[in-house]
Image (cartoon, rainbow, N blue to C red):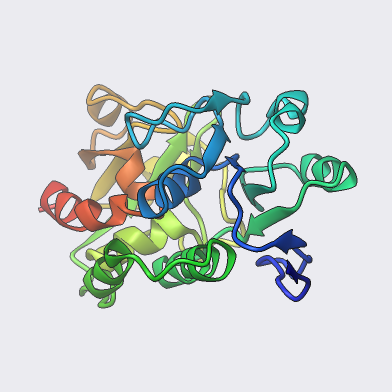
Length: 254
């Protein structure tokens, strides 16, 4: 029976007929979440979908520029996308070719991300809520008191940092790290290095993705801040990794 009432996070209809069995994911976090929770339904994923480590499906290029001909050739009954990671024109092309697409909204917090994942797994996939989701929700429920103020770069050349309303910023805030740019008008500001150095931050948090920062980038560019290297997956991925991320991030920023 066609689920005519199902809509994605952006309010667009997702005309699927029962739980999907041939799914292509264009989002690494979603790839891990759905494959761990309902294994065997994915038939395609991006080149950057590295988890689960044993995932053996067709590869369809990158998230920003997927090879749509490969996606269409797989004849999926659903494509999973994200409003921040995937281009609207690609989503529209897939829909114009008769492929249902569920677009997850760019999450501004851990609860928002887990809420979207719950919808995908229970309403779209039609499965019971997985244990990892309950565990992650409990672990990340509280917001710890602020212990440090930090600059969080996500790119160099030019410098791009976390600004307002980002999932990664909320992740750090919940373990006691306040983003000095959390009140900025942009989600991903591009301040100069000189401006970053003048923030008075205690820490510079350096993830290994999307830009692969190293220990040398700390003292090399931010001599007045303590560098903290962290896993980009723990910082920016929403899904089962959130269970391990809680303890790992707390330990990293002691």
